[in-house]
Length: 59
Image (cartoon, rainbow, N blue to C red):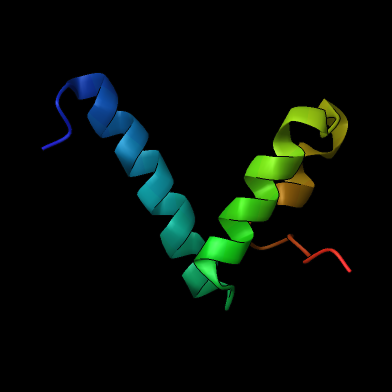
């Protein structure tokens, strides 16, 4: 259904993020939208802040 092994791995990663967000009481769309927006400029030393269990919605 994913088209290839590589596509399946990517789909699994995204599904894992969505489920982790749900398990942490987050709205998945808001979480993913914010993380994908911030990711390109997030310093490597602060990447852990974007994990679902540590993420804080920007004010």
